[in-house]
Image 1: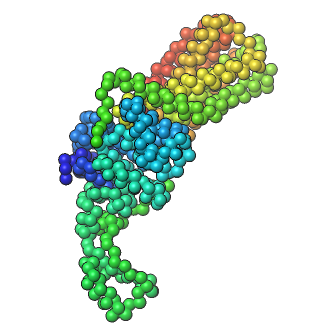
Image 2: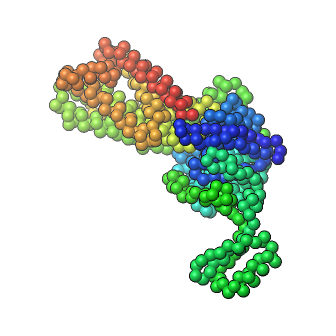
Image 3: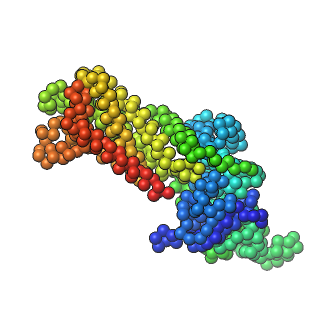
Length: 300
Length: 260
């Protein structure tokens, strides 16, 4: 890893008796995309709020772009952007007006306010919508605009707190494309998600967080490997299922299927499955990742 | 990739930032003109109700319309403050406040933007209400200087009430709660000299009305608008307005920082 742009050591935060962060350690290298993966209440948002100077930790240290988040918040703010769970845009302004306002507040030059805004509207496929009041936008459009606003001042580090929570699958795919193009520009990204697929799709590295601690850290592939090899999954006509371990090679799968045939099992459906990040979570915590359904409903 | 770090003097940027934030709130006001309209309509309805329905039965020693207009003007500011509280509360509870706070700006400028827009909205609604009052026979005989003093007092009252609304907006759990809090303010004028002379009330209420800040402010405004001079309550009126302004302003700033 190149010199880390985000470094957190032993971050702690509690509210009364409730410990939200119990010593979080994180490193994000320059140009790297780290997904902080965990269920509701695991401490993802709290971590991001501390790293983006919105919240003071009770203990531990954090540096972003070489600056201390507690002692040099202004310097940190100048180097980052934060896109939260709730689109931070003004409903009564148009998309363009939102960008212009935030560009001015980010202290861009007069000419750059216009060019950068137009550039981002284009990149995020919002050029036509830019003239409309944000109140008329769909959830996906609002989120794209929110992300565009965050990129105005070309931040070194972009924090995305559950960027696709509450979006329909199509808007989610669109937003993933946009995030990939941001990543392609070499920006360092720390994103939080409870969608296992999202971490797999976007991130170079995944840190699994649970009960305020990072319990695993590695590439999605490494994590999957830690859980175990692939398996053949069978569903019989009578509805019962069976999982048979395999190393995934052609020879081994053929051997297993030949065995299934010899045993005379009435198979309705079969497939070879790699372990998913869901399996990772199950293995690491002994319970499945919690459903994000409840969070999505908070959007309204 | 470059980072655009703010370098020029802080004061220059503060002015620049505040101008941008005021522009934002003015735009927002122009896009919800219906709220300004409501802030005019409700006091005008009350004005008509009091002048044509109740007014005949209220003894004030003159034309009732002349008695009630100053109170209606203050009530207009009360209705206007509800818009301000709701706007501030939706900023504070939506995600946008985090955005402002993560920018290299002095984030209290957000509140300044709302205050300036509130003053502008109130200028429009107060002018409309006074205009309608003239149409139904309000007979102001104020001199030019009395008008200046009256406008100054209204401005001071609106400023104080706006900061109360901002403080409410900052602490409220959401726009609906903010709106509910400001509704309480609207009852203050009823137990004051705004609609009926306090002497006509039962003794307990009369005592409350006498010490209600709305009473000296209404009396002073009435004196000025009717050309009778500021009168004895002028000092109390100004002190009340300034006091409310200072306390509300401090409360808003402290509560705003606490929310960080």
